[in-house]
Every structure is written in C-alpha cells, then in structure tokens.
Length: 326
Image (cartoon, rainbow, N blue to C red; front, side):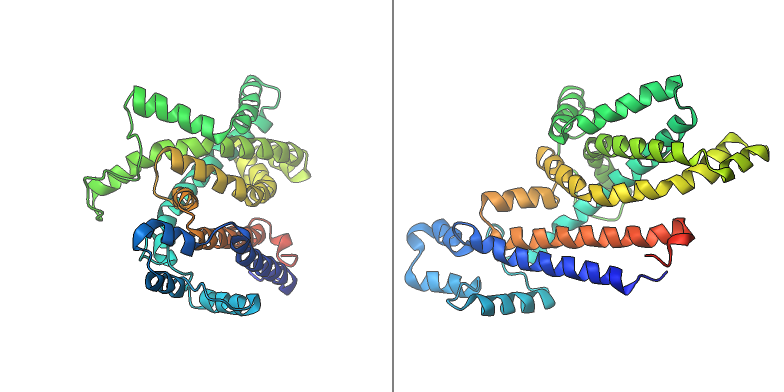
C-alpha cells in the first residue's frame, strides 16, 4: 500500500507545527518546574539546591532559539526531561507506564463500539422506518448528547457503589503483583469493564448514525440490487455488498473523533482512578508538572496523526479505487 508524498508532507507539516506549539505553550504559562520544586523544598531551598534544580531541569538563561535547539535534540534522543511530580523519574518513564493502560482502554472501547455501532447502523438502514430503526436511531442521538462525565459518574455509582458488581476503580487489584497469569488478567478485565462501557455510548452513537446514513445511500447502488436479484441471503447482501462499501465514512468519522475519544478517556480515567494518560495529565496539571504536560501533549498529537495515517492505509484496503489517491 503506497502513500503519496503529498499526503506525507501534510503529516510532516502538522507534526512540525505541533512540535513548535508544544515548545511555546509551556513557556507562556505562569511559573515553571523550578518554581514548583523550590516550593516543595520550602526552607531547604538553599541557593546551591536551587542552582542544582535549575541545572537538572535545563532552566538556564539562554536565547529562545538555543532553547528550541536543545528541545529538538531532546526529542531526537527521547529525552523529554524529568518529572516534577514523580521526581527523579523521567517523563518517558512516567508516560510509558501510563500509555499502556490508555492504549488498552481506548483500543478496547473503539473495537467494541465499532463492532456494535456498525451492526446497529447497518440493520437500522436495512430496516429503515421499522420498529428497530425507530428505537435505535433516537437512542444513538441520546448517547451522543450525554457528556462522558455524566455517564462515568452514573456508571460508577450504579454498578460499582450501589450494586457492587464491579470494582470502584484502578486498573487491577492493588493486592496483586503484575504477572502473566489468569488471576491478574481477570482482575484487569474486571477493572476495565466500567471504563470501557463509559467510553462506548458516545462512540456507538456516532458509529451507528454515520453507518446508517452511509448505508442508506449505498443500498440504492446497482451492485446491491444485483446481489438481491441473485437470490443471496439478506445477511450476505447487507454486510458483504452494503456494509463494506458504507464503511469509508465511518473510518473518516473515527479519525475525526479521536480528539473526543482522548477527552473522554481523560474524564473516565479521573473518575475511575484509572492509571492512564488522562489521570497522569490531571495529576501533572495540579502539580504544575510542565515537562509531563508537554510530553503528553506531544504524545497525543503523535497518536492522532498516526491514527489518521492508519485510516488512510485502511481506506485503500477497503476500497482499492482509492489506493492511488492516498
């Protein structure tokens, strides 16, 4: 699967812009990592200690251009600095630990929601105007409209606090040591159910709505009529002829929704105390841990660009006619 140089150029420009903005924003914020560390030291903040902190966090008096050069060198060597909140851990260590849980949570929610939303959208379009469609389609609009924080708090209160069917929070039982065994895997699964179900309603509603609209336009095409004329089963025509060709707008919508998905994961992880990037960003913001904030914003930008690039690749696999255009 080839990707045009023009498309790669667009991603390169977007990445360069994100790097520049990521460099400028923390320097426009009030305070600095050094100020936060000095405040933590209190009376112990001797001049020698302050100078050592400045040297450790790179807070040297030099022109902005040279600071940017050092920043680019750090990116090239994956040196994003040292965390203030989790000192002496580096930003890479902090984000690396959190990324695993966020990727697991978001990927699981997207796959689950995509499967459910696409099936519901396809069936709603196939039975347009019927009882199934009149129930599912308005319900999808409601799921899109409800804020993630409301879903998270309601889910937590009903299923974890009141009914006690699931754990209240965290990624696994704190009494367990991480290991490759069924006990630990089962604990991870049970702790992930409520966060995944919290992220899923919005995604399912978006996928169902997009899939239904796309599927309705596809059902009028000649190849769908031909499939019906051949006497093929409804499922074969619905998914083999219709759903596959109606998937492109769904994939486009997925790429556009990634920002909302990350936003929803931040709220979800805070509510469920789930140790992912969202909770890390929250704790870093409270602690004014600018190195972690800066590193996480860059990581989320890379994830969004990477997901869009992957969608471009999948486009060509779903519809070979688009291979030359990607």
